[in-house]
Length: 66
Image (cartoon, rainbow, N blue to C red):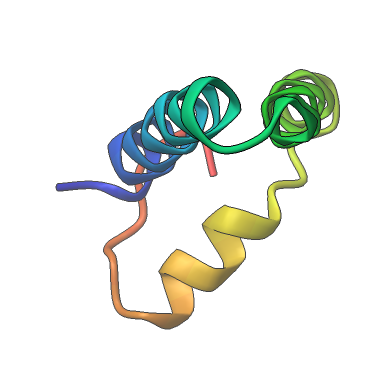
């Protein structure tokens, strides 16, 4: 799996997790969903993605986007 797909998979997992936590734990977990969405949006325009930096250090091979 490349870094690009790993970042997308991680973001998707975080959105689903935060929605589940919002439904079952506390409505304040919606802020995690907002944070993930804002991070995806800024990453699309700037190319800077903290998750990509962490995953790269964990040994995931680079893709074309990050």
